[in-house]
Image (tube, rainbow, N blue to C red; front, side, top):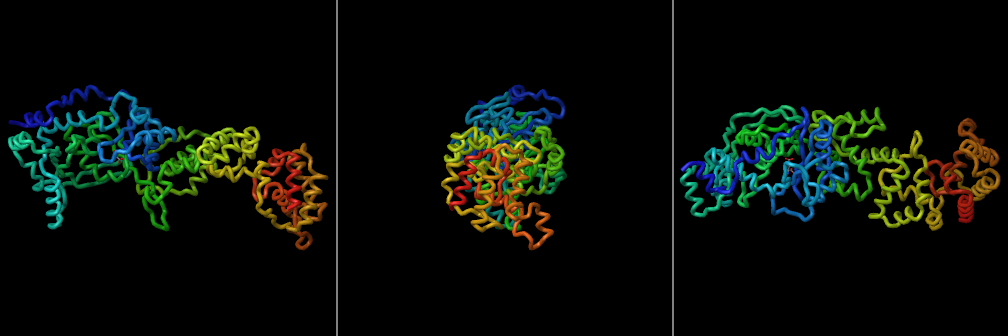
Length: 551
Ligand code: GLU
């Protein structure tokens, strides 16, 4: 009886690994091409950190003419959630991070290196487990979970390192005959890796992001195939990333301490190990404490949050690049109009300890991104958002398309475009006063500022509309006329003049403009008033002044 007999008994139907080695050959890519992936578990929740990882992986693959694929890690079948694969895949696609290969819908995939869902790769893992058993590098373990628990308790009481290793690895010491006998007797088994490592030895490793790290060797005989016949993460990682010909494993840094084990698995399986790049999680400043962005505590941890708030995808992606490489900000300043595809992302420039997520900054980035969009784009994206989240706004936009395009076009397309919109849910607040049907119903008081006296206000409005306002005026003439009006009313025509002569004037041209602005919009702050008046038109302006004088 030898290992081969044991392996045949355990996995009678498994193929030779040469079958898979040939089926999934080395990829024929240009030198330096990065093949990488994201490998999410289908939990039904897409964390912004997942999008971040996907973005980094996709960008590196793109920059090097490599491949970015999505693999679903669903070997923990207890946790299965309906439609969870489409949730992840659609989020990626929506944000422009669609994979070149791998899962593209709940059950759909593309590419030659599949299946890309681990639960469909059972026979592959078993073939490789069998291969290890044949060589005496893995073995069946018959310990019940109760026995494993007892071992752990003993270790805890004796204050020694927990785990299944060395003298504690009971089944490692069974003879092949004993193993075969137990299997034939119907004892349930799982498969463990026979670790060749020693805890008192160190391994040195160079992580692409973290740099040089040193760990004790792995000496744990970890489980590689569970009772349900499916692999554990560690084993599946080694088999999949080998067969899918991954060159770079870019993943969360909670896996950094597993590197000694993973390198050992690659070694014992006879595979060339990939490069590892461990990404620090996105952090949040919580009243002075830096902590991970948490699914439980922070709504902004969910990708769905950005969709619901109407923060444009372009802005989220742009911001994530900002926190990925601090050099991005300078690059963007120097290249305000370039597509992000032209930015050269560098793994070794990523933060080792975790970049801080800052919502204010994100919205700032978003304001800039939106400021560069055309009115048409803003209209379409806002409408898309509103159709799902704000019916009133959707109707307003749909019923007044041409007019809305003008409204959204205010201060757009020039050198210094408006930057007051950070998300689609801001749009309503910034445009409603432009619609007569809504403005008519607005019963809030007029927020007049320096000039408050009703008679003075009526005087200004009356004089302006009867004597100065002309729809055909260009901007300069329009402004000169407001100066004229100010002079006629006894206010300073220039702010400078006002400041130089304290006590002489009660107000200046700016204050007169404010009266006009407030009467027209009930706001003290709006984009360019000239453009607003052009769009409202004379009739509406008259109506609004009359309303202001009445109320
Ligand atoms: N399923 C693992 C996770 O979600 C994947 C880690 C990896 O990328 O290898 O953390």
